[in-house]
Length: 466
Ligand code: ADP
Ligand code: MG
Image (cartoon, rainbow, N blue to C red; front, side, top):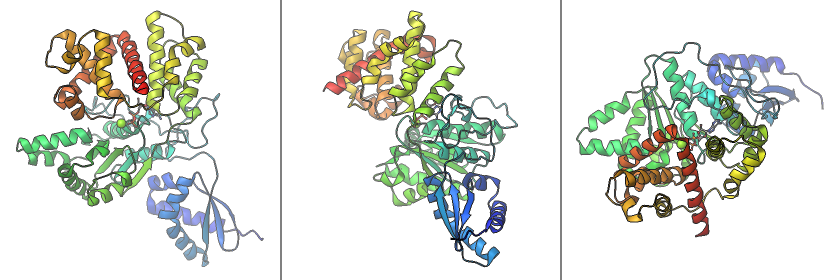
């Protein structure tokens, strides 16, 4: 078959499209290349099936009609996946280690913003949840690139932006990175970052206190609203209604919304249809578990700022054995380091094997009950089960109780409200407070980390037996 050359028309169509869509939107989607052509078809290379599906859905017709105008011919686009690096509008140096095979898709990040503002820390955003600490691999490159584009131009192209995926895959990290970037680059931006659970509790409280108007005003006049874990809204009619109005107000005003969810929106149950369709607007992207190279890169990134060395064999054995999610990956590294510091030993492959053998053999998702946690913790601290659930607030009981709450929060999917009930009918704020306390203590006392990891191991062990 003869080869036809439509590349001039193609290039012209691309430059018109770029002018029409703007640098950012164009940069995000059009990492595509003219590959070849036959009489009626242009073959276009795209970086992944995800891009292909999105391009077919959103842009194919526009491009084909531009080509018709330009060439006077009806040309059909045929997208094929070709693996190569994604070019970002704001490309920066690679951070992947040369020794590891870099993932086939993007390994680039936008440079830190040119003008960093000194606004201090945003009260609701974690300082470490920034793009600079987020490793991009093929499992998350689309989501990460979209997040970067949104952070430089909030409220324009993708509204809302919804990130979904299983636990510990970086949803919260990515969402907060958008918040932190906007916080550091836009002087007047008002940003709220909240979990769906906190939003719900605050909403209920506002009705109780008759301050509903203040609640509405607070959420309807922000520039960026970040809501984490929206699966929590399932079954909660009242707050869904409120969020629907908040959504509309922000959407109409061109304010950016970002949500995270543990599953695709279509799988949420007992959700108001109008709200569901709002969530599905804009851009929904998923995060997948990282592959081996990306897991290595994540662990390397974590250790690179440390003064002591974790040898590459130890990092490798962790990356090999833990593949389900990043949180477990980090926990294993944390456990190893806590042990080494505690006993003043150098980390070697053998030490890593020995210390992590339980972690490696554990099934990741057991049927952990709060009861098992309370029993295990009360055994360890030699206090009674009833005291842990009861009202006493003496230090020897209050501290183990906080630890139990912390562990429950870490390894179960219960909300703080549900946990409060499990712990003798306490308020959700008590549980939140307990977790904060333990977090603070963990920073001061490295041996606590080892204790907690040991307890978690014991709880998981008991849970798989029953
Ligand atoms: P999720 O909200 O999906 O449950 P998180 O955002 O809390 O997960 O991430 C869990 C942990 O893993 C966090 O400490 C986060 O910093 C880390 N993490 C996840 N993905 C990455 C990544 N791509 N690069 C670096 N760290 C990551
Ligand atoms: Mg999260």
